[in-house]
Image (cartoon, rainbow, N blue to C red; front, side, top):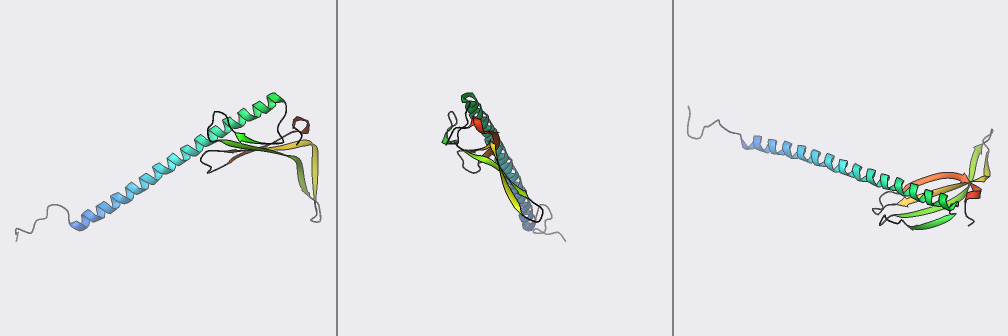
Amino acid sequence: MTGFFRCNKGFTLMEVLVATAITGIAIGVCMALFAQGHSQAFRGQEARIASQIGVRLIQGWKARKKFPSFETGQIENFPGWTYYVESAPVSAKIALPGGDTRTIEADELTQITLKMVPPSKKRDFVLTFWIPSTETEEP
């Protein structure tokens, strides 16, 4: 019997709600993936800028023929970026037979640690390298 209210054309309310929920979940996942990609691109850009800054600072110190023993400052032409430089004698901890340890210092080498802080202050970029002690300024 076919009546006025008995029409099988179209979707039921439950089918529409399920389809809407599935679509909402799919859109949410896509938005999260786009946001993650944007975040990765931003971190990559900060890392690229940090490497440019590091090269520029090291070239400047090489031109002066002296690396600072301690220095901090703003980076020219990179607003919001700051840097910190520290130097320390190079030392190595050696494990001896029997469980003893011994620390050996190399007077000829100095460890330079360069820390660059981006404007976002989310993640610091640190570069550590060794140079001859004769190339550092006296503290």
